[in-house]
Structures are given as C-alpha cells and as structure tokens.
Image (cartoon, rainbow, N blue to C red; front, side, top):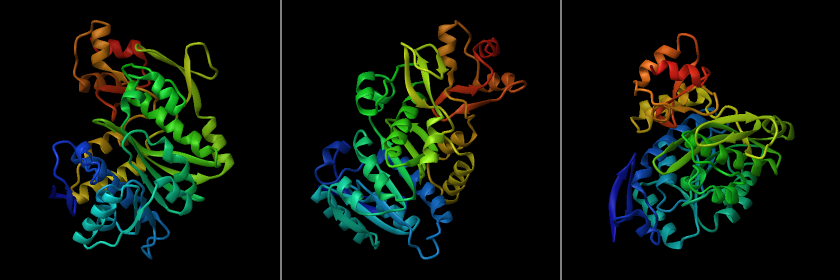
Length: 357
C-alpha cells in the first residue's frame, strides 16, 4: 500500500507502513529524517552558490542510496543542478521514478550498486545516507569526486560509534569507542577520522564543514580536495586520546590505555554554518537550532556535560546560562551542538566546578 505525503516542496508516494523498516522492499522512507534533509538542502544551496558550474546549472549531484527519491527530488526542486539518483533496489527505483514524475522533476535514475555507479562516474557533490554504517561507500565516493568536491555522510550505527559497542566501532572504523559523557562528539570524531583515512589512500583530504548528531544518526558535511600535502596537514591534526567515562587527555604518542589517533581539529566551519543557517531561515526549514549551535560552539575538542559533573562531584544543578556567564568573564565558553546540558570551554575542570557553586 502507498500513501501520499509532503516534504519540503515535494509531494511523494511512500510506503503506507507503521515503521519505516517495513517499507524497505518498496522504498525506504523515514519521516524522522526530514530535519536531516532540510539541513542538507540548505548545505547544498550554499555550495551551489559558490560552484563555478552554477551559471550553467551544471553542478553534478549524486544521491547514491535514493530509496523513494525524496532527497534527490528536493535537491533538484529546491536547489538545482544535474541530479543522479542510484539504488540497487529495483522497486525503490520504480517508486522514485513515479515520485519524480509527480513532481515534474528531471532526475537521472540508475538501478545499480552504489559503489559500482560511483566508481564509474564523476560528481561535484555526493550524498551517502545508508541504513547503518557508511564506511563501505566512502572510497567509491572519493573516486567519483575527482580533484575537488563535497561529501555528505550519514551514519545510523550510533550505538557503536558512541561507545555502547566499542569492539564494533573498532572493527568498522578502526578506532575503539568509549562510553563517556562526551560520547557523541567522540563518536562523531571517530567517523570523521575514518572518512579522512579512507580518502587519504587516494591522496584526497577531507575537511569537515558541519557535523552534528540528532536522534539516532550522525551527519557530516565536508569538502574533498586532492593533494598529498593537504593530507599530511590532516595527519598532523591526529592525536591519541586517553579516554574513560570521567575524563580525557590528548597525547602525541600512544600509551597502553589510549585510543586513536583521532582527528581533534576544527569540525565546524563557522562561515559555512552561518551561511547554512541563513538558507534555513530564508526557506523556513527545520534544523535551525542545530546549525546555530554548530556555528557558535568553540572548536575546543570535547565538551563537559554539567549534569554528569553535578552528579559525579555532588554539585547543585545550576542553569547553563549562569555557568556560561560566570566562566565567560575570564575564559572562552559556549554551548555545544552535541549535548543540550553541556559546555565547551578552555577553563578547565576546577573552574567549571567552581562556577557550579
């Protein structure tokens, strides 16, 4: 059974099921990912504006795992460019074609394995949004991006990345995760590190532009540039971390308890995030608070969860605004996109605890 829904500027036929997983045979559609797609539209719009191919509307965009085609259709209708949509599921492609026809959009549909398709074709922007881990698609995406491009990646296996299943993270991403109060950022950085290392094998440097976790997924946007020297710069931004549930310590060299090396440099590009936020406001799309927090947060690696600190050190629960006001008199401090009860600061633990009195 099929029903009709509306998302963004698109009208869509989607499986009429109680849970998204039940519709995978016909074409997976998850309404909970609308915010993800809203932010993606705004990100692509910002990148489209700076593309040299914009004037001729020739920016090549690939939705590599399209399912119902919702992301590809929204990219075409709300941004522009030449859009390709790929899926190995024949039923999904049939439904996606119907949706493109319903929306009067020209999409190039391909019923093929995503890795095979990406390896054979070149694009300016590739979106990888799988059910589970994205790592198996990163190398092919890198090949398709040539000398310069942009990559968007979703990972829904957050239990592994955020430390619930550390051995699974080590197996899939090459780094053991840790369950801790800063798990969401650690898991995000493990994913970023994995992407960086895979693309380095092609002498391509991945630079994060906007990263966040929401609900059950991690979403990362970044630029990809060819150049061995650019890759070497990224290598210098990899450090080891002694991480446990109560603290962390960044080190240059490995020790018995360390994990990594992990990318510890900037994961949010402020100007890009502010431009994305502007697009979200202009288009009246969801996700504005996520992007605002990403734009405003300090680039200090890892955050302090004040609820965790309150419980561990038997401190009163003080409002985040009060803690920030107290610390900001002498230190850099901000909220973080990763946790609503956390701050980022260069103040150090003792001064944070003092601000909680």
